[in-house]
Length: 396
Image 1 (cartoon, one colour):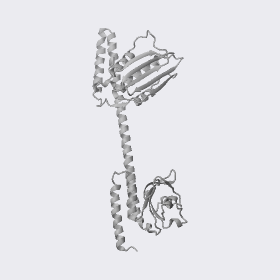
Image 2 (image 1 turned 135 degrees about the horizontal axis):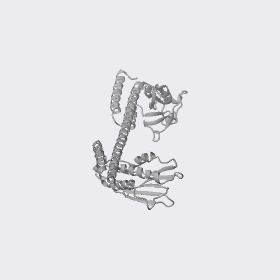
Image 3 (image 1 turned 180 degrees about the horizontal axis):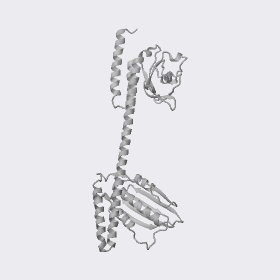
Image 4 (image 1 turned 45 degrees about the horizontal axis):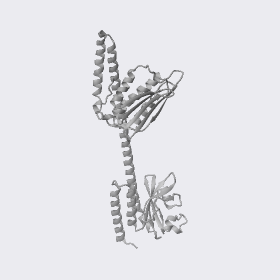
């Protein structure tokens, strides 16, 4: 029988083990390694050869062995029942320790094959829980049936509390990391959208300036002064607006995400459908903005001129990517009237040609067999390596 000195020494050993484990529990080591260490230290502190940690799975109502010591290969990953005739099951349901001194002779508990196979005769289970929420069970198993394991309840409960605290801390850290990542993604997305909006406004200013310049050439000389004043005022607005631009505008963005959202916002006549097939691609932001303007211009042109009120049709936007060649191919096609040979060159086409040139691409416009017009733009995914200062589209 153990004397006072033995009990004191065992208490000191338990305190030393708990202090050692507590330091690791508060570190950044992964949970699986921590649980394996818990089994090893608890077994050493209680003088048994087997220990395990079981995770309760409410969706299956069972206990999954996630860590252990002394078990044959294959036991880790095995699920045990969580009913009241299982010592671990009763522990998790009542959130109280369960000690069984002679499991083979017990009429209250089932003797599971895993325990029988390893000659386990007695055991002690303590809950791993957060207040009233059960996470799992910490168990030590003995090949003796002397009931000595029940004396280790305070020690094992302290261990289980440290495990619960470590799990909670890691869960909180993971949630914070996920929230931080979500926030970063949201901020980046808002930043891209803001930049795109900023430069779309800038593009509109340039387009207005270009139209004013074109009209000024057509009016009599005596009327040009008014247009020149208006052009100067727009130029001042453009200059002020450009000073608001954020830096790092040449960074890469998802062209597929950009075009998917842009195309989904296109609205033509009720009898014209818009379909899209857009492959994943990443390009500099300035390239995405130009391609977005091109799609908007060509799709709008199809809406206005390709179809009669009586007969609708389809406008297709397709993006194909040749990663090996580093090129993309943007197609905007309709099944409408096609391009008549005598059709004059509209200012919209001049804008498209200017934008295509600015990204180092080439434009091909052909009538489709069976009717309709297809405009295809082949362009380098890097945008021709233009300088950052060339971000703003130039209006022809």
